Structure formats: C-alpha cells, structure tokens
Amino acid sequence: MLILAFETSCDDSAAALLDDDGVVAEAVATQAEHGGYGGVVPEIASRLHMSTLPGLVDDVLVSAGTEIGEVDAFAATAGPGLVGSLLVGLSWAKAAAWAGGRPFLGINHLSAHLHIHYMSESPVRFPAVALLISGGHTGIFRMDSWRECILLGSTRDDAAGEAFDKTARLMGLGYPGGSVIEDLARRGDRSAVDLPRPLADPSLPEFSFSGLKTAVRLQWEAGADPADLAASFQQVVVDILADKLMYQAEECGAVTVMAAGGVCANGPLRSRLSLECSDRGIDLRLPEKRYATDNAVMVAMAARAVLDAGYPASSKLSCNAFSRWEGERLTALVDPEGA
Ligand code: KG4
Ligand code: ZN
Image 1 (cartoon, rainbow, N blue to C red):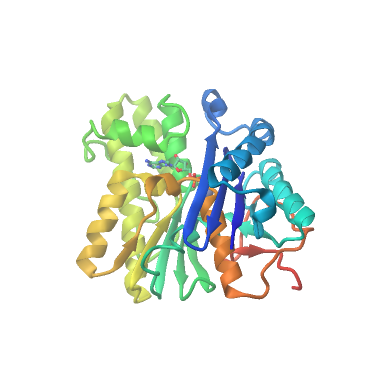
Image 2: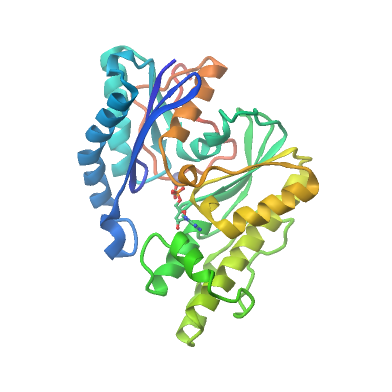
C-alpha cells in the first residue's frame, strides 16, 4: 500500500510517500521567510505552501520512480495549526483522492507527531506514556494502544517550544528559538541564573511556562550573561518536562516512554530522558532529530495506523481545517466517514 501524505500546519511544507516497508521518498521545505518577524506570519506561510507544495510532490514521486495514479491513499494534516496553511495541504490531498477514487485521510497533527514511532523496527509496547512537546503544544498522554490515547494534562499557557521561541526573541536571537538557545547554552553555566519553576510538582501533569518567560525577561533586562541565561532557562524546562514525564510513567506502569514534537530535538532533554529511562528499565522512543520537527512522514504513519486498524478508514471530503484541539481522547483520523 502506497500512502502520499502532506504536512502544511505551520511553516514547513512537506510531502512523503510511504509503502509497507517504510519511507519511500520525502521532501521538506522550511520557510526561512519568517526569520525577520520573530514568529510565523500566517498569510506568508499559506502563500509559500501554495507555491512550494507542487514542486515537493513532483520531487517525491520522481525520486520514488512512481506516479500519482499508483498511490493507494492520500493523507493531510487537518489541524491543529494555522488554518490558511492547513487548507493548502488538505485541499491537495482531497483533490488527489477524489480524482483518483482513493481514500482521503484527514489527520490530527498531535497524533501524527506521536505516530512517528508507529513503524519502528521493534513495535512499541503498551502501556506507554507519551510527551508531546512542540511550538504550539505541550502535553502528556497515556497510551494503552495506538488507538487509545488519553490526555493526562497539558500546558495552561505557553507551549515548551513557544517558551524557547519567546526567550530567543527577547534575547534577539531570531526564530525559531530552540536550536539557537541550545547552541548558546553550551557556553553557559546552567545554575548561574536563579529562575522560577512554575507548577513544578512532578505529580501534576500540567505545565506553565509563561511566568518563566517573564522571569527570563527580567534577568535579561538586569544584564544577565546571555549564555548563562540560556543555559539556566533550558535546564528549568528540561527538569520540568523530565520530572513530570517520569512521574506519570511510574504512575501508569509504563513499559515505554515516547517523546515527540520539535522540542525533542533538544540534546540535553534527550540525554536526560535516556538516563532516566535506562535507570528504570523503560523502553525510550525518541524521534530522529529531523523527525522531531514537522514532517510528512509522521502524517503518513498516522494514516497507515488508521488503515491498519480498519473501519472507519477515511475522512469525509467535507473534513475541515481546525486551529485548536481541546479534546481528551486523541485519535489520528479527523471527521471519519460514516461517523
Ligand atoms: O513540532 P514542531 O516542528 O512544530 C509545531 O508543531 O509546533 O516544533 C517546533 C518547535 C519550535 O518552538 C522550536 O523552537 C522547537 O520546536 N525546537 C527546539 C529545538 N529544535 C526545535 N526546542 C528546543 N531545542 C531544540 N533543539
Ligand atoms: Zn508539530
């Protein structure tokens, strides 16, 4: 089965082709045009998806040596994300599915991030606890199977990636902030600047990063050393994420801990989780760094999981884009046919 998937929820345009054995071809174009604005400008993002996606689809089909008529199912991120951006990928997938009489699958972006672990060489064992940490979302989920994914708690204000981005912006480091903060932090002392740890109680599966961002701003204005500030900020975020995740892993008797989303590219966080999980004999699944940030492979894998599970295996063609997800039970397929 050949699945062609699209991801256009924010500032990465991506297409990927997946067969029964894994990724056949993929292409990602990251929009550098937002750098000067300190964040993603929605209309610029939509327009760039519109002009970039056709070339990406051609690249993927050519490098796979196949044609659009050979594709068995089409998938695209339906949300959460920037609606104008989402509509571009969604409309592409719907049009291709409709023209070819193939199934169309609208995919939840958060579920897609977790599904990057779906086709791993050794299948994920359950119960598992999953940490989703991206630019727009931060949450912990309990998973009893790929289809049973329950939100234990999320952020009350900023997402973890947003905290990195806002910290980088106030320090004049540009956008996106995660990797620049991580680079700068290498030269700093992580205990040099005293910062608050909001909602730090590990037993509370909720997060709050906006007070931390304000404290960073005050320290910055008071003349803190940039590298020390970056290192201290990063340390607080890593501690909060790791402590809460490991607490829930023990509570749920998890045999697997999964992490997904752009912030998983963070080196100190990856090392900390590796250490914590190996101490407890828990199987840790971290995405390769290129699959931590937005990509279409994860969308294709989520679609694959839906198709493997059987009915309902397609979304309605009227499936719409959405900006926020506020549910409790996270499912991969949006707006199932027949529901
Ligand atoms: O998952 P993603 O690509 O997009 C969303 O769905 O939001 O995540 C992007 C986020 C950005 O906030 C970016 O600053 C953060 O991931 N990020 C990092 C690192 N690389 C990317 N955060 C911390 N350390 C990194 N190395
Ligand atoms: Zn994402």
